[in-house]
Image (cartoon, rainbow, N blue to C red; front, side, top):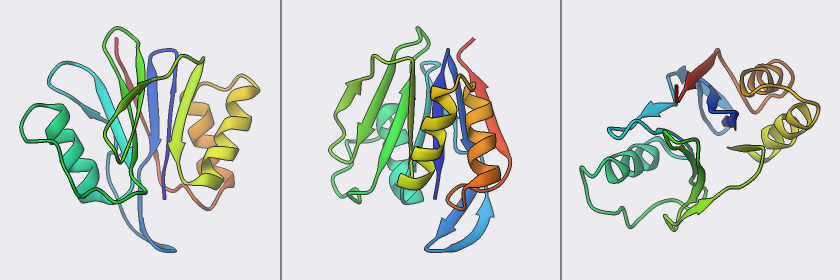
Length: 142
């Protein structure tokens, strides 16, 4: 389960990897694409990596993504796009954006609504919600 948050040109994510209710490892989830954009996805790892390859122009558009896949692209100019399994990038014109497990999203939303930075929102979610795990990775488009 995952939480990924974008606010003010910064993307933050937990590092926990889960299968069902089991945490089986940790890894960086935020990836810098070849064009300088930041990308992170929630869902099956193979889906996240297939979408990365497509966004980087290294492969064709994936066709068999699990319906649970969701991701965020933070472009170098600060524009934020949310992406779901249909692979349509939707411009997100709000002060902050988040994707992840439903319960983690609710927790992060509350933190962000109270003025938390992306990093603070993810840290609070990891500390107080069982649906996000591990250290916090933080990347900036700057």
